[in-house]
Length: 248
Image (cartoon, rainbow, N blue to C red):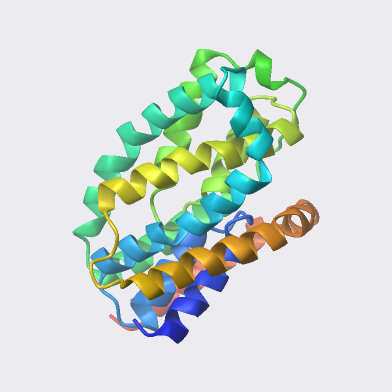
């Protein structure tokens, strides 16, 4: 992959990670249809792209992560949800890797539509972090695990789940971001760094995604609250399916 392609993907990830539109799905679609990558390589790159935005989350919520070192309600949520995420994500990753590019294109389109439907569900919250119980934590992890599939928005799914469970919106946003960090690290450990990715390209990815991610996080979160991204996901999903079907 050229440095220009690497920079484009890094910018897409740094911006799209905070929006409920599946940054992984967008990255995989770009790599399959524009950059000529195979599905296994595209998945590895899409997962690695999350390392920079995970670093941005660590910087943004550094005080919360420091409190977790001494034990907290958030630490329990992170541990339980991460274990549940792994239970679902590992077999799903293995499944999607063995599908053809055409199948994955349609699959991503269907999952984008599903993400749009999830985003349209009525939600409101009032429960705080300390009121989250064990079953909430387990189901949150399972929801995040399904978001390993390109096309399912991780942030959109986890935030929607928490709001459906009546968790306060501010707490839901914070929890969704924080639990993403161990999930990203675990996914990269499981998949490994893309074999063709050299040190310079890897450094470019981490620096650009972290920089764009940190600078755009607050603004895009405010923007996401005012925009109906469900229509975007559904429309983009339909386009992906139609284009794939007519090129079979």
